[in-house]
Length: 236
Ligand code: IPE
Ligand code: IPE
Ligand code: MG
Image (cartoon, rainbow, N blue to C red):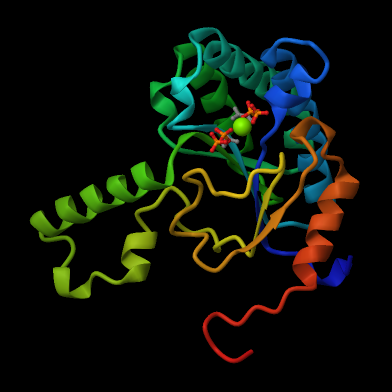
């Protein structure tokens, strides 16, 4: 890995917690707990490497289809993580954001998240974006509604609606598009993650289940990205 060519924005689909637990004869939540530990190590490592933005897919708009126990267990773990590790994130100058409709999460989770966002809002280090109750389609619909509203209110002229105007109404407004999207757990799909922002992202798929995804695996994914030829539709 070339430390001089670290992507500015890396996004990660943290998949494989359930299978990791099943392989150990344990309940799914055991895997989600191990996944939180893996996430913590990756956040610290990405920050050390000088990544500007790290966006992780923690809970999708489709994950509500899971059992109520699993869903509430996942939110509980997120609360535990942000509460317990807030001081460390803050010390590392990490600024936490949430993308997705997190306001409709259980009130305890919303409070912890808001505390985290407020505490770290002045930090100038890595932006750590947690995608929670996030879906790319829901995000685009929300932006479309904002556009419609602003056009109706005369704030935006339809003729002036361009990509930048739409992008500025996404949850990720202001962030560069991810150069690299990593998905662990062996599945090769986006599952509704960063549909707009990922238009030209390099996709790196790892068969490693998320709880086993170490900083070394993370560096391997960056190395794979660095070997890619990005053409953006041109001739390169
Ligand atoms: C990813 O792991 C975490 C979430 C989707 C919340 P999974 O829970 O999807 O694990 P697998 O894919 O079933 O192994
Ligand atoms: C994607 O994983 C969502 C997160 C990692 C939060 P899923 O396990 O939900 O995706 P599918 O169902 O395999 O597409
Ligand atoms: Mg999965």
